[in-house]
Image 1 (cartoon, one colour):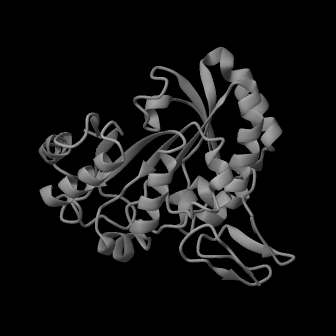
Image 2: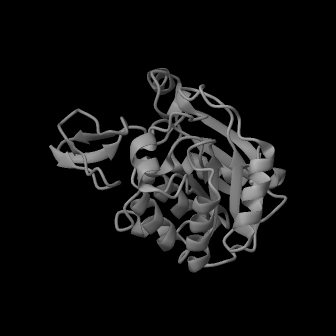
Length: 278
């Protein structure tokens, strides 16, 4: 048995079994990511799709995803590779790409406007070792490393990774403990601590998906944007519209006017606020 130190759960994992994320496993008494280098998705995306609006705008970035996640968002848009029963299928359909191979592909795609590699689609921090090993090869090639993450990771465990990441989009999914604990099975404080550390090392943009009746109040957006501003009022915040999906089909899509109203609320504290899915 060994203890995983990626997130707040600190899963004690028996030999050959898995932690909550269904990715980190115990092998010979050591916790490793089973999905190291196992790629389910790869695409050359506009950087704005991450979304990163103020990091090399107009460029493209090689985007890769694996499988697994350490949250359980009932509205997940990538549930096939994140946490549903379909993850087993994703495992069987994934292909191994070594860090060296991924760095070579990224370098070759420079001719198509590529600036680096974005680890995205599923939660990259549950296999942070792969992102770190790849980032170490990208830097000498003048390529950027980007993470699109839920931010639910221990900052001390990620300390070396911070040194190599150039930009992150981090989900700040809501601003109450009950929302994180009850709906997402996560920990808000850990996410906030991760964001506070990330902004010391790289370019950071944040995304909040607004769900009717859950995190759509003026008060919550005021508190969220005020906290972000306390770190740096120039941190960009993306406020995105929810659409019913996966296990959350009982709610209507977020009204467009709600998104634009909350943008105005956030702009009282932040310089850059963007709307998404509108």
